Length: 206
Image (cartoon, rainbow, N blue to C red; front, side, top):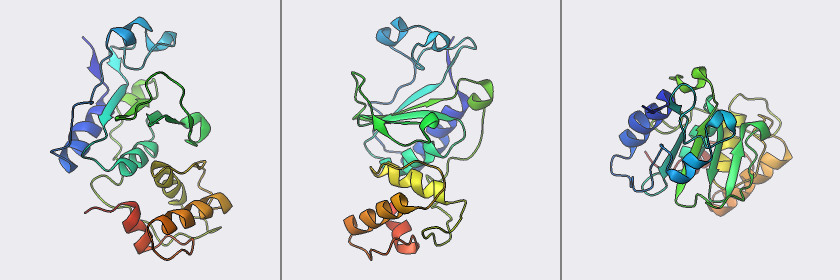
């Protein structure tokens, strides 16, 4: 009998359902339908919605309604088990440093976020926290060309908001440009510096 990977259950049950207990679950899912089944096992290049040789399903779909999508995408992106994310015809893959590219599959995943984890028992059983969903980010003031561990988390968050950055931890020109664009879109001071005001706009809920 197939089982959803432990780390995916933790995300769903202990984070998403706790933070947004009334979220829409209509498009939630994990076990593959007949179309997924026809693609074969993940080890043979089939869908991650199908059980692997350990009987574990490594993919989950999360309905977009009733959650804060940028926060969920960022939280998935910075988690060490994540392999790739698909949302609204963009795919964020670990092999590309989560820099989004166009997704050309028949299902654009506009109504839900798809998350696949790495195909390993270690990834499946990780209990690492999902940052940002239950607690706001704990960043110092971030600014261009200043080394900070949080820079890659910032880049993940900006990608969740629709920007196109390589999540490499380098606060260079492209990241500064994205910060300034985000600040302008939110009608706050445009200075390229990520302080309390910008953090509050990135994650605008308690």
